[in-house]
Length: 148
Image (cartoon, rainbow, N blue to C red; front, side, top):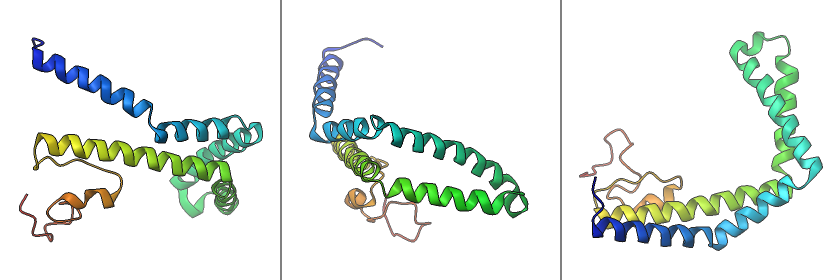
């Protein structure tokens, strides 16, 4: 593929967009929340413990209720997950991740619609997908009367 002046201009615009994303407040909030979580030694230990418990949970899932430690592991993983979910730093990290993903989804939608209105852009937030003619995407099993 030869680089034409149009491609060079597109690559320059991509660089500008990339810098804008990296300097966005959403990226800064995500980085701050991430640093806050992973600079807390106790929280990192809890996360590592949860990861180990998740491995045991996956093993239990293979055998289901017939696994000898089914009840113990199922209860333990729920308690650990709840404890992590209720941690303010983890909650802030999840919110920051969602905000950053929403920013990326909005940018993807703008780029997709610039190319063509018919471009389908997968987004994680269903509220951002309201620009399509059927409102909820075409994954509704044909019940949407969408013309796309």
